[in-house]
Length: 448
Image 1 (cartoon, rainbow, N blue to C red):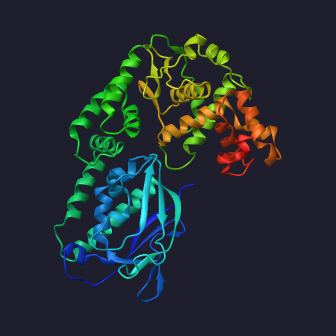
Image 2 (spheres, rainbow, N blue to C red; image 1 turned 60 degrees about the vertical axis):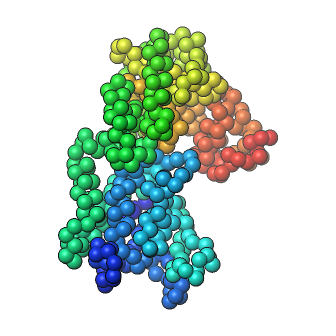
Image 3 (cartoon, rainbow, N blue to C red; image 1 turned 120 degrees about the vertical axis):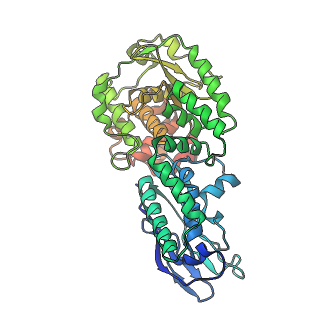
């Protein structure tokens, strides 16, 4: 569930010496995410606790605008680096102020994950006048984030105007951003920069090349690949997957099954309504019903027959591929598979992910990438594959009263073998259906 996001001015304070824009925007500033107050601090000098911080609003407004595209679209990274932190952590704003340790971990396109950490007690108390008190993690609606930041920046700009500051870096940045947001072509360009973590206008040659690739493989496909790649490797990856795709000669026969679309609902990128995993679940059960599978396991032979594909081709893998992907054939309803995982569980899961992506009404790319990122599209694929191969409702029906903790490992192993999926898929189903407590994935019970 997404939380609300707000950044607001509680009170404007008096002028100070220094930069005119910063001086004019001295303020009592508050940041809140849902019921959590990011800016709750202990004032070490006055020995009081308050929900606002006394800072200039101009530096944080400038930081938010300058990093808008990366905050809004860059997915979560497995490992952080300094460049990433400068664009995602408010602690990097600087300007001589003490900022909260609030990190925008990454966006899936619909929601933005955030983590706030308190300052350790006793650290730097002799030089730092305040200590931030709250620690929490949350997800915020991307649209709510956009509207709150826009409102905040416009408030700061009005203050600058009222105080006679007619020209500042913030005003220039905001002018550029509003132009980009109002221009579809420019917005697409900025998004494509943001996915692999590129700052605006810092690698125009790469982005121009990616735009050319998008004409061959599809714009949304290129965005997914960019989100899963570093800027230094993406060109080589695209050349590699294109070569593999061109060598696909046998295609599955998969009618679009447009009648399934109502089960999916609106766009995966909507900011309200079903989450991406719910879209995947809906479509998986709709396809199972269409193919009269009930809750039974889907063997390779049964899947190959429904796809009009030789089973040997369904079981064929391409470990040299940088990731698994689907590829549309020369005519409607034709789908090629390039799966890079050789283990049965991984191979079947990636085939199902491609199938779900192909059937989703949102996507019409020539290529359907299957990556490890946490974009809305990849979340949808994973949910579809998990439910299509091993319907969680089956587990709930078998164990309506829950599962004895002592037998979890055995039950997980049995279902994993029966449905030919990983134990991780089964366990996540159990957790999501509240049949077992969360956090058991590392439990020694599963090793028994």
